[in-house]
Length: 417
Image (tube, rainbow, N blue to C red; front, side, top):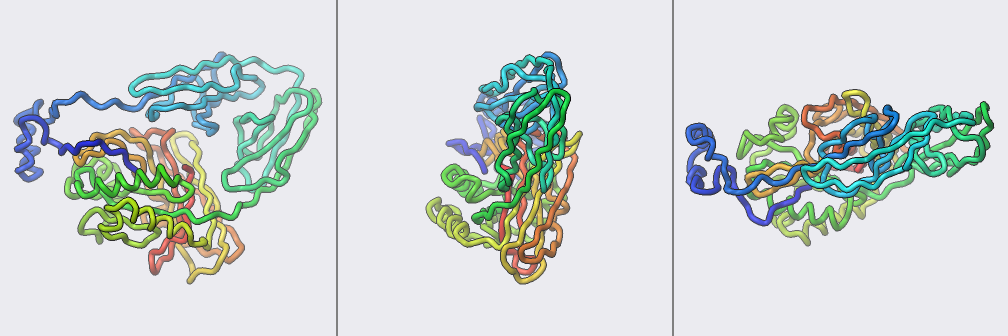
């Protein structure tokens, strides 16, 4: 998705140097080199960038959570690349109680907010062994994140009665919660079974763009409006940037090989597909028509349920989840996962200033992976990608979809958004 400025401004076209746009791109670069530094001067102040949160604790070494999700960082650390807005920050450390349990922090552009915690060592405690099928469910004790995923031992739970729950988006737990009575020095078990909740269809809007593509602006603005109105429970979008009209597009350069592989047959832009169905200009340039196309696709019952989650391990992002087949399809199908980054501030030549669906990597490869799943059966997947330089980890998400290899039709999409 994109956030678009109210006026379009082309690279190199500001101030008295607008005549540069009359020259071919290579000639523009050469003239810029001769005229620097004024060549890139648009006569405006730089737009504000993302903000950050400095999270500290006494003592240090506590896992940091942002809006209830683990960041992979431990205190003291700074979470950078955050879009302005409100965030809930929490920390967790074995055998310590944080004070406060959570802080609401407001992030401003180009500013670093503070979130400080004090950890008190716990005494008179026992242990709780928590397990689930499938594993890697978030564990909550008395409604607060424990900072661990199943299976795990919580070694320092205060003696007394507690409510244990586990959560994975898209799954229902049985039982919903367990009451345990923890004795000093003792240990109790808490086991859960998780089942996928039948999903409504989530539409995949797959579009090809370039930061210098003027015709791309209106449909991308329409997509942003539709996303705000419908939400990620109805559709998600992914953007692949190609090397025309400008090969200097920074998003293309960051993932050039995969984007060229995906766009080998594309001769013009924009190209926008809804669940694999290519839309025409009258459809994507009119907001009402575009929204109607998305809602019509979302009304079709999907033959799959798709769950995808992410976690950070060291210098890598892990995208993992489960595909469950609910109805027959023509044959074996293809699963693809895209790691996308949201809230990227970039002053593009076509007037777009924020990008919310840029694909950083396709996993396990551009073409995805063939899967064979019987009706009623499940297929688990797990892919890893090294986090690239400049990627804002808190803004990384995963989108997974299953499609027909023969028609390209997308059967169902899942997202960690």
